[in-house]
Length: 376
Image (tube, rainbow, N blue to C red):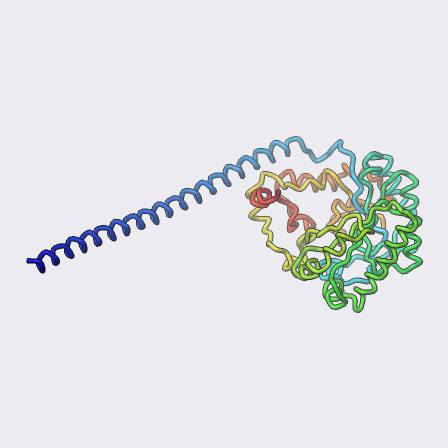
């Protein structure tokens, strides 16, 4: 009897365990199914929100585009004045290295004077506060009269900015630069030793020399109590990340550096495949075009740049003069600003059919919804 009772109790207990396990299994299956359905719901919600945001953005862009036209009453800003397009460096991230085909030379003082005078006359407030970059696709300190040009711009009321490679700061050049002086200097110093500098900037045995010359310049600036704002930048891309990690703490804490900048990597006009390969994300403007009513870039309504020979281009990314609006010795900047060629460029933007060789592959032509959302 005891034996049979024990068997019954075991049978009942086993049945309860089996029922319990089946219930647990069913609960787990239900949870998995619920999670799967929830993930599907969230993905659908995300897609719906994205489509809604794209529609909202397109409507906003269309409204903004209606306020634009092929002519504008907005006064132009002078973005870059290229003192020279000569350069001793062969930087891997610069299209000048392998793709610039235009003639090389130095800007004449007459071209420079025309550019600065017209800018100050047309937009004096912006010239004084925003200033003008005295560089484009060359090393400006190679110009034999760079200090005369800076001094003239200062004299007539245009603030001046200049991007400089510290390797160029030989003692006499440094003295002239501080005596001019520009309002703002950005020193570009990539790498952390001679090998990394050569890999990025293409010049041998140059990093340690660059640092020594920069340190001497900063000490001289401090001794003179010069007010020029000093920024040091390093470009953020794979070839430079180790160097940034090694060097940024030193430069951020340096008493002679007013600002340290990890500079965003750009692909310029997007026409150089080997530069595009360094980008974190490839851009396809044919896809982006479908997400936007018009390009989000507004440079054709804001800025002009002048190359060393007096030719005027609509964008600082135009390294090879792909769109020339005219020459400053023949036509005024004001006339070019709403001239036929500039109107044709703006019309491409307003029609959302940008096919010119300067803009069609540019990563800045459209700003995607996903990119906009990711930015702080």
